[in-house]
Length: 187
Image 1 (cartoon, rainbow, N blue to C red):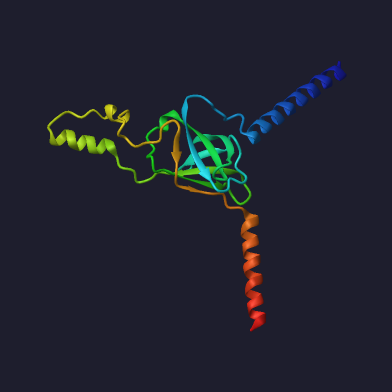
Image 2 (image 1 turned 90 degrees about the vertical axis):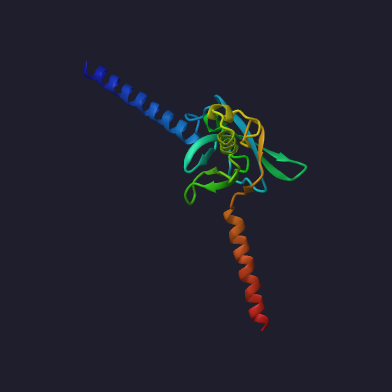
């Protein structure tokens, strides 16, 4: 009876360990938070997208608002083309929003950070126009107005900043240090 009870407890312990390893694997691979549900795709071209992966977070003000959907190489411009899937509720981002590739911490994963541009607020212009004409203004009508310059499905983010690659920075530092020391030696 005692050996049977020990085998049951060992089985429970092994099953709990396997479940914990599975949860850890899901967390590390970002599969547990991947949501390909409703949203819209925007595209950005980067000179260097080193370290960025599919399913990497897309954030704004430190909050995840989407994920990287696809990364391709453009043979025409020799740049990385990053397609990002943004959540549907974030459909009011100005068209002149900028995108940068950052690193979470010193050696953490790469992610895309978005910064809203100045963008003209078409809704405010329509509200002021309606007020001047003495008409009633409905803000809900403005969100779907074609004149509202916001990111939509298929929009391209033009202002981008590529990934900082530690090896390139070290190489630039070393080459500058060597060239400065050669100048000093010639004097």
